[in-house]
Length: 148
Image 1 (spheres, rainbow, N blue to C red):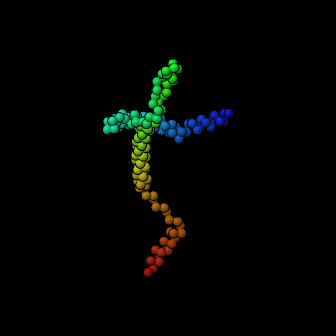
Image 2: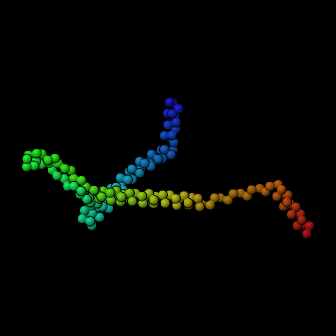
Image 3: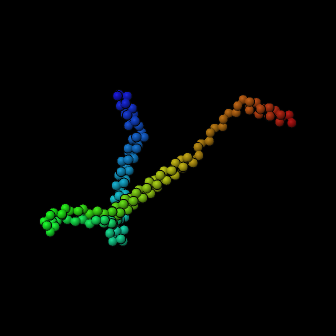
């Protein structure tokens, strides 16, 4: 059991897990910001153009009926409205597209920074000393040039 707990502790404290946790927390906060942007900034002008907001767009399949009594005095139970709320779906889709686009831009920016770091030329390495046989051959070549 101690070994299991130790393994879990090592896993939970690793950098990747902590980075992932921070990413999830920041992602959740970012999602709230985007949702507010869509609901409070983007959708009101669209709602003005459409006459109402996306969230109120729906197809009613069955209208609601209040509880009532029939002619015989029997209580007729209430019926809830059944509707397809496609406006909510459209609004969530717009949220997703905005989040996906922003994440794309962030990753694209990070990749361009990485390329710049990789493209930065490294300092040229000092020329390596020639092996002994190459030195010998160069010496022989110089002696032959002197004889000519």
